Image (cartoon, rainbow, N blue to C red):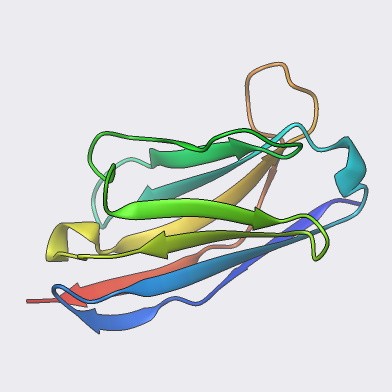
Length: 119
């Protein structure tokens, strides 16, 4: 059974930083890619960035490019989202997701971790 669990959310002032973690379990050797998404109050969920599980560069939405960095520790089965220069528009619930079928949609989702950026 695949599980992904996010952690690291919280309250931060504008201009500050947070690092989110996504711990994966249950057959990670078969993972194709991991993605980070977010959903702000009253808005649809949007893609933040992603990375191939086996290697390669991460890729990002334009709204976070240059401020957010995705990294992974395959030995620990953890993917990180380092968020710098946060602004109130980054306030959202952040989700981690795993794609194991490599057919488009992400297959497994975490419960989310809330990030609140105060002005």
